[in-house]
Image (cartoon, rainbow, N blue to C red; front, top):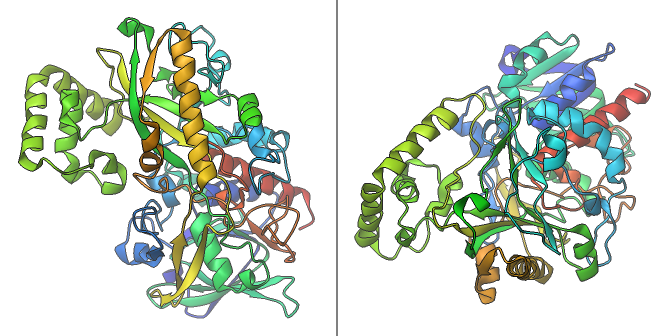
Length: 545
């Protein structure tokens, strides 16, 4: 059953065996899994079924350094389906090394290993609709595929691991009928949780205060409460409910990812010797290969996890003479900034730059029109969308798009401000920080990759080593990857939840999602967040009600 809090009387009281707060991909996965065996499950969502400016405005907050972090209301959606309504669909598991305690990565080490999470990745891939639970080119396809770069055999990098792509699946839309039909499950929209009430000893959650922007207020009680609000809002609610007064790690160790585009990569072979596109599986799902830093190299050199993809030249510079890229540049006023910010750069040039892009479009018109038809058919109109813009280079020339692990830092954090939102909740300030170890991971990885390419005789990668830090911070903290603000661990002094995602010292309060990740890996967090949610659901189903 799905209803709106406005359908309930003012002063309402709801109770359940399990209450999940947040109906994004993690909350919905939990609800679908737990709503069996006679359990009464309540799923609370602060937004409605569609975007609402007033509801989205509850996410507004402050940032400590505007150039390094987007406004807290960007890259996440306060509505049914959560940020799965806008995500790009990139899905891949974390690597075994990510779970290890690494002496060269301060504050690393999960209280579980990859083997504890692996049984749940298959179902997570299914829920995300990303194809099969197979993430190498050898296991994902029954027939051999062309190499990513013919002749490349890197000492430090592999090219056989895959990123898989969801449709991308809007969890709210895709699983609405299952949520409506699930016996014992109730979904309540516009139900904003503003306080977590605890017993006198603080060891048990006794209830939740729920409010709507329209003025409705009520109470919820449940045997177990799971916060599935994302990395920022989970920390905000825990801090506002004064749980951070006892657990200092709440809001700390805030990570995103280190990402950017750099350099010029020129391959010497014929055009067909390089494959930078998508491999399509039998089920129609898209997969793409990338350079991946070998785990033994990470350990030997003491650097974090790192991957890189072949990328087109930087779009704002018209010297690429590519009509497709110039058409994208000219279309930037109609593309949301958070998804088109790479279309912006040094704006020097004004009308001259605009005219140069227009000339590129005119002189490359057949290819540009073909690309527009492809994007309309395979991305705009298709149910399973072509994941991104991939340009086949006529000259085998590319830039490099990198995505790197960020070292956890207790001083990188989110805190409450004195300003309150329309519900009376303190707003959030993000003080996201990166460090020298993050710069070292990118700098050393790029140098290693340049060496691998040159030694293999396949091409040359040129970049300015002095520009690495500016390139990796050009767009600031990477998108909606909010990680680590309620991290897992065995010590309450440096973590918020235990290995079962239960908040230290509170018997019936749990956290699900990327907030609990102690480290960030190289991978986008959604697939692992869903797998972690399924592991938590399995734990709760096996424990006493």
